[in-house]
Length: 461
Image: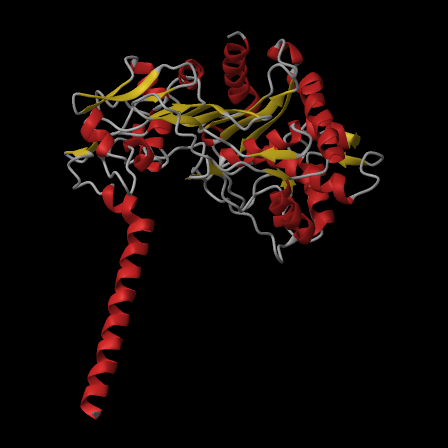
């Protein structure tokens, strides 16, 4: 009897392990099947390492950016469009990890756990995808960069739809250069500079310092400062200014003239705790998700226990701060939208080859980055920047609110990173933008005209 009992217990244990194994395998199949199916050795989906089973990708005007024809992936007929949309669409071998072909590969191929790759077997390709980007505006942005390394991003700050996302350098997938992986010209070519590049923000960060000051210094608009061409903290080295702004410079003019002396003093007065808090609330240090899937660089910002001179340098956008341009684009979008940032989205919808919309739900949310009162005040200051400093005539008809930045990398001005970011205060054209040009010298003189050229193209459509 004891032997039978022992055998019975053993069989129960064996049965339990078997059931547990079935449960584990079922769970793994449900959660990882699409990942397994998308492996490059799946010949239904890949040929020579290139994705061939995906459906057609369209821009917002139904222009074809990529499609599968006779078992081969074919891209836009326009050479310029192939280059301007490369980092959005992705390359054939998925080296560009932020491209939609890589991020949404299982949805594009139409794989699902019940039917597998049936759509591809039946139609020769998977689901179609429509994007929010306008390839004409991307083309204009790519041309405006004129071969320089950098990025341009434009978003509808009311809806979160990404209208333009261009990164340079780029290349033509139909004519891949032999020196793509060795030439300095193509350095970082697989990086989407809008999303994952690490840049010193320069004076665009004064927007962050200004927001912190508005929130924490009650008499900020009544104060004046003295700028003698720089400011030397009690302890530390001098923080040089871009000019000698003289006596009695006020808060609005300090931002418009981008006075390092004033903003260094503000950062030191505010202190590390308040600056850290504001930066965190504005999303610096947190990744941004595009369409719930495509991830940005989180950003680097921390001034805990920083000496006064480092606090000062940080307050003017130098120091150790590093951000992705998409982060600054989100901040200015929130300012334009009354303090609220909406989810950024680059995917409009999906449809199968029978023409039926798939109604795939993409994450949407709204996050308050600052109060409406603070947003209104900083908006007024950014508009003042354009009318009193940059020249409204340079941006005719755009009703622009903006801030430039010139991030210094070393003592050579030709190595500066030129920034220009802001938005159009226009209900009919609710667009926010960011332009970054590497080795660009001055933000207002280099990135500003590029922004104007692309925005004028956008509003004239």
